[in-house]
Length: 176
Image 1 (tube, rainbow, N blue to C red):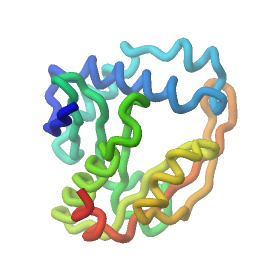
Image 2 (image 1 turned 180 degrees about the vertical axis):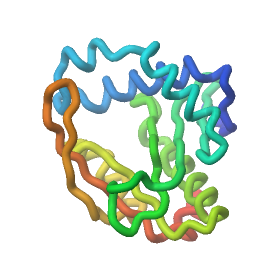
Image 3 (image 1 turned 135 degrees about the horizontal axis):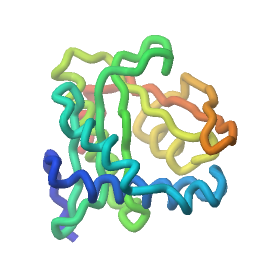
Image 4 (image 1 turned 120 degrees about the vertical axis):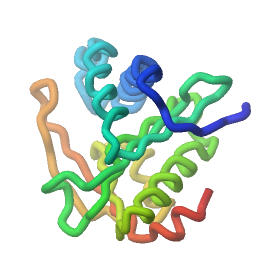
């Protein structure tokens, strides 16, 4: 396995949308309704990712194995109301389950931290669903501190979420 990292283009949108859907299905089984996960649509995610890839204010990076996308990250300004005091946000981080434990997530978050530091950022927040204990443990192992708890509705179900704040951007940026 030789993982490479590069900035995605619009030609990657369909594959990114597919990775997004697969990661939700792998990570959120038991946390979201099974029918909802089964019926997630790659086509519905394509428009979202086309907009993200086209946004010059959002940092995007993909990890590839033999040319295929194995993971991705996007980072930008923190959305209003996400967490008081957060100026940046890891808007998405997805790594296919087959690639967990291979330091791809660490490399993607380190790249996001480097990007945010160049923008004068002080910190980054990342949200995850409560109950996604692997994600929470990963963020905490990288120095993220849980600072936010909230909830949102998806597929008619109220879902608890949490936010981990990284105040250690310089350390994080140098970690991979």
